[in-house]
Amino acid sequence: MIDPPVTLSTLPRPPRQAVRPPVRPGAVRYPVLAVVFVCSACGLVYELELVALASYLIGDSVTQASVVLSVMVFAMGIGSLLAKRLRCRAAVGFGMLEAGLALVGGGSAMALYAAFAWLGPSQYVLVAFSLAIGVLIGAEIPLLMSLIQRAETVRSRGAGAEGSLGAPLGMPGGRRGRRRRTGRGWPLTPRARARRRARPPKDPYDAAGTVADLFAADYVGALAGGLAFPFLLLPWLGQLTGALVTGAVNALAGGGLVLWLFRHDLTPRARKLLIGANVFVLALLGTATVLADPFEQAARRAVYGDRILVAVRTDFQEVVVTGRRGSPPDLFLDGRLWAAGRDEYRYHEALVHPAMNGRHARVLILGGGDGLAAREVLRYPDVRSVTVVERDPGVVRLARTDPDLAALNGRAFRDRRVTVAYEDAFRRLRAGGGGGTGAGGGGGDGARYDVVICDLPDPTTTDGTTLYSEEFYGLAAGVLADGGRLVTHAGPAVARPGTYWTVDASLRAAGFATRPYDMDTGDGTGTGTGDGRGTETGTESGNGPRTPPRTGAASGSGPAKDWGFLLAAYGGRAPGLGLAADVPRPRSLSPAGLATAASRAERTRARAPRRLPPSTLVHPRY
Image (cartoon, rainbow, N blue to C red; front, side, top):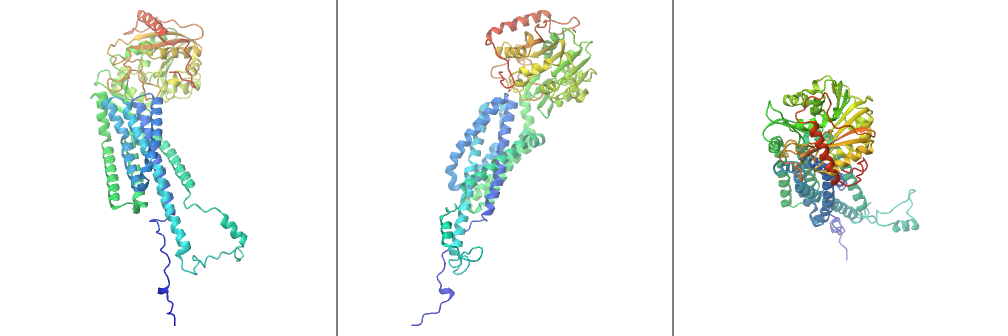
């Protein structure tokens, strides 16, 4: 019997090859890592945005940063656990996750500002957004790792099928084409083959390497986001628009990755859902970006009322002047009432005039960018020079150019005796003096001053850690002339005796002898100048809030009704508490009033803890 001829059509077909991935496997890892980089940068911007805005609006930046970061890290762990339920649908899950994160994170700044403007400061809103953003960020890495592992697994299976069964017999990839030769062309020896067989099998996907790559991209992206927030987003776009633009970038990166690289993992319904969600989020963020300026104006009116004269954002803070043209204005810094035009003189007379009892030819004002303390100093005709050390040039510029604010400070900055140094007060003293070089400021010149006036933030603020420390007062002692005096606001002695007497302890630890006095605000409502300095601030300018705003940001403990001051001299003898013989006639201050203020301060000593330690840079106690 003659066998039929053998042809290619009669040969048995090789097994079906493994399915290839929709894109080249080598092209999966790097785009995913790029998206991890972008999403990590966006996530850190969301965190910093919440911390910064909460510090400005609610105050106490240390507390706000601790709340945001701790809640967010905790929520990231919850998000990682919840992501396990989405591993079977990792592609569509990641796409929808990024759309939700873009919407929540991008709109968080606007929502928090709205809550502050219309509801008052509420940490519940801050915690809610921190929790939601943390959960969404925590689910990113597990889902991305599932996508990479799936792509690598498909690649390894496809490669294995091609190498063993995919090539015809006799071809280089087939069974008979696998003959291995050494470098000289000879087959492998039995010992070499045994060593090759003894090697551990290669992992189809390098899980450890994948985790390392993902976290490396995540950390580098966090660095980029952390640098972009203060140096690019805030100066160029501001807080609200910067957060919205960040959300749009987040949505484009996450949605683009899934719709491009993992489109074959999506069902038609999932693809339409993902496209619709991203279009909706982008449209919403775009609309909010267009309406950001009108929204901000409406929020300002809700906080400050309808009589906004000037609203500017400096490099350090938001400065708002309210009132009627031609009448004394109110000055707000970051939503906190800094000076109420109708009665700010009560505070500044109590701060300045007791310290001017003695030689006062040269005066140094630390803070005081509004010019109100300088106005009181310049009322003494024998003052030869006044140096104002203010960190924020925008406040001084406004105090010079705004007609109502300039009229309130008596156009102090036009006086030839006044020079301004634009620098942090602590850094200025550390440089060796407070001398300025005209309006532009300059290096310390080692000058000695007869009077040092500390017109600074409340001790309980973050800046107070530095500006009310033993080290700060030690530097201030170095610029005082013999017989010179230093005066500082120390918080309300009646409302917060612990804080007040801690400032006293810090001055004494630096070598000062102190004379405490506590002035009644003369304002029973607590508005205007009722808080003495407030307990909250977001400013970094060397100035801080004196009083709570009329709406929205009042302290939870209510407004205080006293101002606590400390008059000090370096050495063992405390200065006398009184008024100079040539004092210009005050509107609210008298020798009898100062005697009553000294008695009121002493009565609060018993309410403070005994033997209060001083506050230092490494151990702040406010």
